[in-house]
Image 1: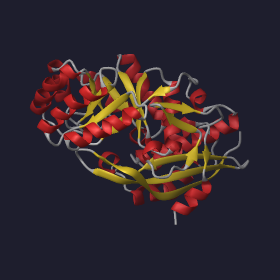
Image 2: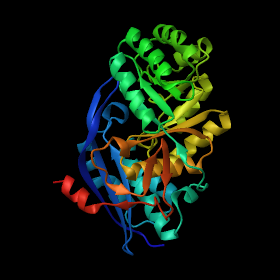
Image 3: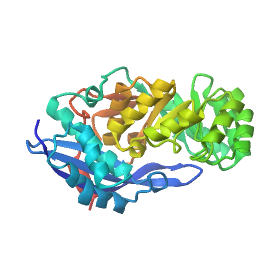
Image 4: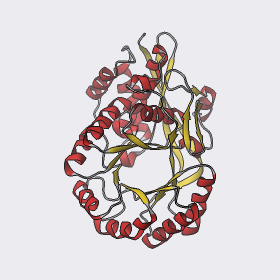
Amino acid sequence: MGTVSRITATPLRLTLANPLATSKRTYDALDVVIVAAESECGATGWGEARECAHITGETMTGMLDAINTRLGPAVTGQEPGDFDQAHRRMDKTIMNNTAAKSAIDMALHDLAGQLADLPVSRLLGGGPRDVIKSSKAVSVSTVKAMVAQARDYVTAGFKALKLKTGLDEEAEIAAIGAIRETVGPDIDLKLDANQSWSLHQATRFLAAVEHHDVQMVEQPLAASDYKGHAELRRRTPIPVMLDEGVHGPRDALRAVEAGAADLINIKLIKTGGLAPARDLAAICEAAGIGCQIGTLDTTIGSAAAAHFAHACPVVRFAEINGPTRLARDLATGLQVSDGHVILQEGPGLGIHVDRPAIEELSQ
């Protein structure tokens, strides 16, 4: 199969076509690290991770340093398909740093798939299935602005919307009602408070909107509040999904033991990549907890998330729409059309990376 001859990391700042506002911050651009894993036979696998310091604790500078000085050298010389060994080597070299590890893990999967002439979904033990339905997040804002954005997304073909909440309870309750009236009964509505509520606030808010057929609420309380999430599940019929509260398999076990979640949102920057995400999904499947795969990436990271969804039936929901938010993407091979994610057939991630774009944007 050949071995990994070199790992390189390139920092980029990617502008969003329109800002994305949550209760915590507004995103106008994404700071990302693009990783290339080169084989001695000339093939290149690609991965990416965005800076998300408030979740993983990693800055752009930190990710670059970890990849270039520690993680990259740790996996150089090994077979790209030996994912367990890659993670053992990376974990032995440096603790945590899950986003940096995820970018390398992704690139190794892409490279191994190319060399074996298999899609990444096959390497993960699954295989291609139907197209993936994706939700798209509506920024927290005024009632009028949220309704307008929701209408635009539905017009673009999205059949599921995630409404950001957590700033203005009265306005957001009104917005949810107005959006449901505008988009009709056939559009799925999710909520995401990004840890902004207390148990009392969450209970009150969800009671006020449950008649609008809310599909789920994501991370309503603080990430560490497993007990509170378990109590909230007893108080509301709306399914509770943990995001920031579950990074990897150990957190998933804690959530299961506490009875804190109906659903878990898997993000590769939290797990450290596809291999540990597969372990997390197995725990959820055994516990009867459904999963979502979430990403805000270019086509590179979005393709990895899509392959994961194809490989893991426990992934019932997806939010893979990063390419639709970017002013400029970095690859082709994945299409978000009519609210669905469609992967082209091909080995590895099945994508074609625009190397000139990476070189240009890195200047």
